[in-house]
Structure formats: C-alpha cells, structure tokens
Image 1 (cartoon, one colour):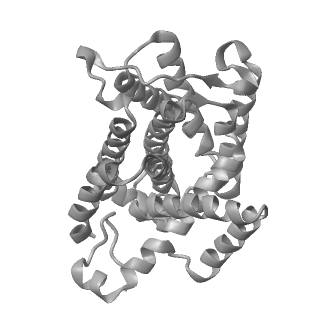
Image 2: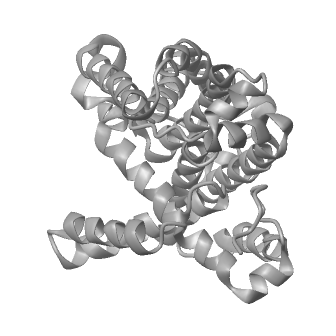
Length: 321
C-alpha cells in the first residue's frame, strides 16, 4: 500500500542508528531472505510454477560471488551483478528443459537440478571447498576506493537498496504486458494458447527473471555470512523459501518479504523454547494453508482502511473484495 511506502523507507534508512548490532544483523538477513522469497513469488504467485528447487539459484549466486571475491579479487558490486547475471544465464537452458513439463513434474525437475548442484558443490573440493565450503568471503571495496559497504551498517544499506531496487523492477515486470500475460497463462493456459501466445516462452522468461533476483539474493548472502556452503543448494532451503511465500501471500511481491520476516522470527524464537520447533512451525504452516490461504498480505488487504486507501495492490493485481 502506497501510504506505507515512505514510513517503511524511512524506517529502513534509520535502522542502523536505532537498532543494536545483533538486531541489525538479523534485519539484514531478513532483507536477503525477503529478496529470495520475492524472486520465487515470480514463479509461484504470478506464473503458477511451483518450484521445489529454487535453492539452486540462491546457492549458485552465493558460490559465484564467493569465487569472484576470493579468487579474482573483484569489487563487491561487480561480484554481485556478475553472480546474478551468471545465474540467469545458467537458468536459460535449465528453464528450457523444466518448462517442457508442468505441475508435479516441473517441481521434481527443479528439485533434481538443485540436488545435482548440491552434489557438485559437495564433491568438487578443489573449487567449492567440498563440505567445508568457501570461508572468509570478503566485502572487497569498490572502484575509486569506495568502501562504505564494508561495515555492518554500510552492508545493511547495500542490501536494503538491492531489495528496494529489485522490488521496483519486479513490480514493473509484473505490471508490464509480459506480466499480464503470465497471469493469463497462470489462470488459463489453454485459453492463452488459443489467443496466440506461446506459454512456454513466457514461462522461460519468468524462470530466468526469478533466477536473476534469486542469484542476487545468494550473492548478497555470501559476503554477509562470510561463507558459502553446499547447504545453500539443499532441498530444505527450497522448502523453507516456499513456506515464506505461502505464509506471506503469493502473488503480491511484498507478501513474501513479510513471510520471510515471520519465518525467521518464528524460527529464532521457537528454537529457543523447544527442540521441536520445526514441528511447531509446520503446524503454523498448515494453519495458514487451511485457514489463511492468501497469507499475511491478504489479511492486510482485507482491512477496510486498506481497501479504501488502495483499490489495486502494490504488486499489480486487484485487491481482494
């Protein structure tokens, strides 16, 4: 909702001056995961493609950025952009193959590619570090000695800027004729084909776009955490980000960001109370699927003041009646 934009942006900008270091670190992780979840929403919410292997692009972006920063010594901004572009390039043939199928077959193919990359990262020790991963990933200063993003607060602002910029690009993408066509394909693929559209070509475009932003999220995570490990490719992470999208609200862009924040907060707090936190989190997920299928963002759009303030949601779809 547009009336929230300025307060949210102001809060994000002021966070380093207000929050203690450990909370600022947690918020940075939330923003990275929010970008990751938003990239998956382009597939799940706007294209109707349920990917079970989205961790593949996250891990690929993280490893590409790590190798560039550790081995090539390139600056951080260049490594981030190169990692996102490389991930998108790899997604072209993978998307071409995966989109030959639909439904469960598509989900299983994406899962298979993610597990394949997990095996490569685990076995190719000379390049990926094997099970130990790549440690000591630096935040190499940019050209002309620009180094403001090497600090905790500076890196937070870099992540926040990437998230805001990515959101604006994704919103323009889903509001474009291409995005409108994706919605038509999601709702009725046969009708879209009858009207002369090529659904598979549009699905590949969405797949590659989602891979670009997912790769960017992974590239941001590696210098944030200081390492990249094979676990970034594992199917558990793919499941977690899918949970974030569903809890937040698929097809809204902002919803998955809220879902990422809710997931991380629940995980941190529940793990402090019980060793069975995953079971409790699973029950919460079941409740959302059964009783709140539109997610957290759908609950916000239900409120009367939200409907009065904005007849169309910020992601480009019409608000729920």
